[in-house]
Image (cartoon, rainbow, N blue to C red):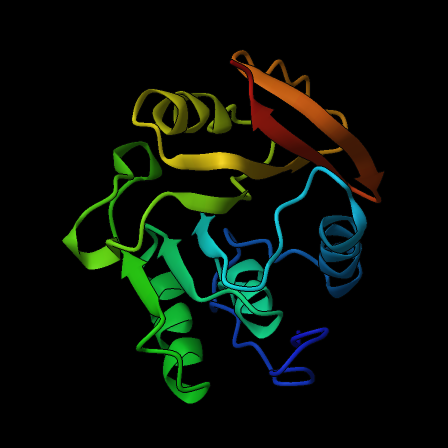
Length: 187
């Protein structure tokens, strides 16, 4: 796995040595970021404040930083995955603009360690078909974690039934086994 584009293009991404982590493929990541670059509803990644929830290897957040994001908060509970993210942050020299949150994503908040403001982009890639996105979307909404005009990028299994209450579906794409929804808060 590698960074697809931007200032870190071609750099290898360490994956956690566990079968429970399913990294987003290079092709799916490239497609997600192409949509974000060209969609009229998408905020710019230049200067973005990003969260990578259920981060796994941190590939989505690392890709966002490579493409111009100023900050990324990685949220991951699995110890081997956190170790891989830490290794990726360190070897790419990103410790000044990245934080690693070890708590459950339903406890996500704007805190001293990630005090950069509300998130412009929240990438969420939970284990497929477990509905873990539901409480996290609720947390994002009730804690007002998404910046005005911000977007949530939710990856789930291709066959998943998703009803993101309180959010508008801006786009809905399927690539292989992955279904990706681009969501904005409704007023």
